[in-house]
Image 1 (cartoon, one colour):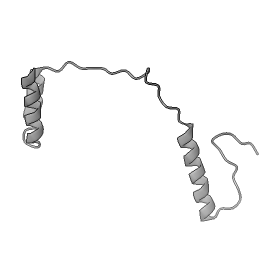
Image 2 (image 1 turned 30 degrees about the vertical axis):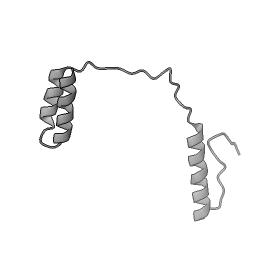
Image 3 (image 1 turned 135 degrees about the horizontal axis):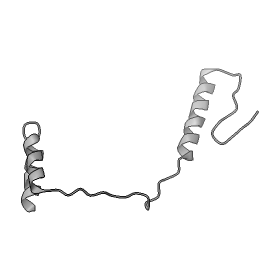
Image 4 (image 1 turned 180 degrees about the vertical axis):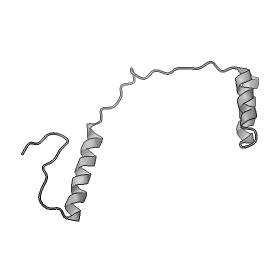
Length: 79
């Protein structure tokens, strides 16, 4: 009978409630085992945005989303 942090001992009881309890324990263990990412590792890559690219994007979405198209043209006009 070996036990570790994320695995639990299997019991011979195979009722519905014991299965649900085992699944809940495993879910909780998996959620608590995840380490949060540090902010220092995260890097932001900015892509250069040109006015021509914004205008072409606005033309692409003109038919299905005119409000988005207007916003893109407004952003392009601001420089």
